[in-house]
Length: 536
Image 1: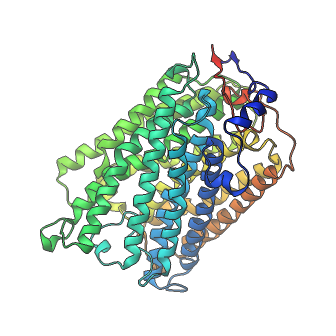
Image 2 (image 1 turned 90 degrees about the vertical axis):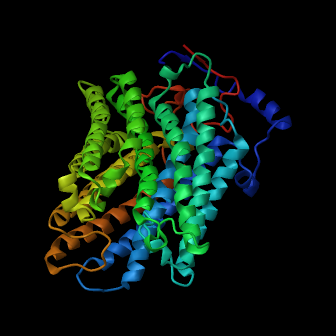
Image 3 (image 1 turned 120 degrees about the vertical axis):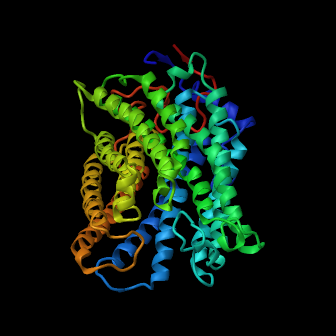
């Protein structure tokens, strides 16, 4: 991989001549509305995801404001439940997933030496479905009865009791699902068919591998979610009784279908972050990644195992003990390939000449905090323990440790790492480090106490609570405000770099970085690799 020859977009003279008659770069609003360029679409995904992150974050802060004291302070319980549900839906489908797809759009063609994504127009379509879906979701707050309040899992029978806001949420999820499937097909075809000559699958950067596997996961499970919410829709409007016990249905059937989507989904949200961290750690340890092949196999194992563990979310539904045992052991099994990954990252850093710029800080922070989240997941996998802490704040602590400190910190690490390539300027290192430490400390202040609240029996998704939980809730609320405000600093850092206020970035700003993306100038030109590079 190290010996890469690349023509630097074969000189600008050719570029312009080529541009004049073929695809000259559009300007103004048309450039964005009709975008078919992978970089522009990637940028739009990232902007959309960040906007949704701010919206979802605002909802989280409203939740935490209510929970600062016991008793009902600001919001009716119905509105609180809407906030909880919408926070979950917006963060999962509006922030984390589109952000990773933005990364894939930007980086996958650059990393495999492709000129663009395989289906450029479909790429445009799959993006533009998202703002529509996001607007639908947000608008559902303002219809009679308000937004859906059935939890992000949209459990029956609650879903039968919601107003039109529920139907809007179902439609929005269909749109987001369609967007995900199209995006995934695009990524699969791009990676399998458009690699530069000499780039075998086992020479690809790990980020491309994790995204290839994630895309297959998405194609497999998004239709399952579509089926589940369509059944909810027909139960609501067309007299079917899939999930209504009085009509001969079963509300637990909904949970099975939902979690058969939902468990692979949580791995969809973490595997690309594994890919990002596997790119950053070798770059700043200045060593090749330890155990590349085992990383690929571990990622594939996690993806396969993710399909056979779904009912560990359902230990409290009265399943037979043999069922509990199966799902318990299958879940524990997933920790092995995940442990392999963590071992390989640590082994890559071992005796490396490490420097701790912001991407590395976030990557190391990711490993540390993600591992804590992994261990609490392992504890939850044990049926007898799970039955005790099911639907308590312990579970909330667990999944925020893997989704915020995992997915979101992975995204932050990747943003700092590739930002010089995206905008051509270096970000402010000092502010980056402040953003890291501020996020890391405030994150732990917010979510660590929740483990103890859960163990003491504080149920999740409640607007009110018993007085003994007050202190921990106050700590968590202070942490949440601090964490939320830290992300405004991140926005400032990004805007500052894009405005050209930093040092101009070299083609390869990180001396230990490897890969084709560092052979093109910074910022990456509009068209790259029109002549595919040779990978030796």
